[in-house]
Image (cartoon, rainbow, N blue to C red; front, side):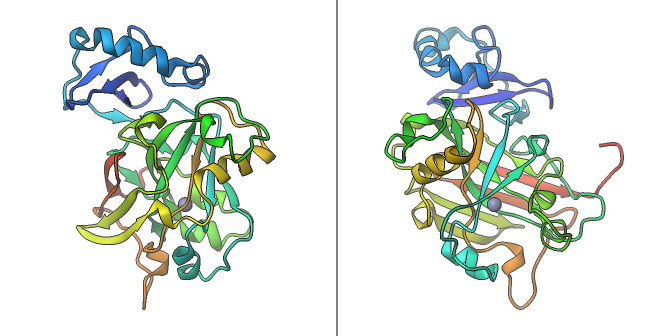
Length: 288
Ligand code: ZN
């Protein structure tokens, strides 16, 4: 099933997109797609409800804004340098163990929301990524069992301000956490619909020019390895997001000159089965 959240930013309600493309409101039976919902577990109960009640549920107009399909996770854990070609273009060695960094949960935005260039930023960059949503509390999970802890998958554009990330000292989190820097969605697709997470085409274009074009098969560490690995170091809660890294084709790696985003640029990206995102870059304004 495809989970969505719809309505004004910060006041989203839960819904689902049916196989026929129609979106229906599930707020009569689900409070939100949050830690509690995944822990219950809410997905099987919701699938049951859909089978019986979807035909008579309230239809969501196609003009409604879509928000991030998961409500404020306790954390977003990101994996760095998980594709050989991206490590090479970044001028960094292949990691012998997964590189982990955090992204602030306040960076989360809807899949078509404007992306605001942060105050003082000059090197805003894109990264198409497959993100995993955790379905059960996970601590010291084996690689063998790891996929049982995955509720589903979603599309993530892991935006970065490279000057904050790489020129200001300390941790990458500085360049990854600005408001709107984590568009998620349009859907959270439940794991039963993505039986092969390591064979998904992934792409990104800027102003219509295709710049990233790869497949999740090219990951150095696969989803099961990553869920297991992260759970060695922290407890993953239901609803938490792990973003599994980007392939080559980011602005920082462009030759002969890096290429960064400016107001008015249009970024479009997609992953097989997980839908498409479309963001317009806007200049910083204080009112946000
Ligand atoms: Zn990334």
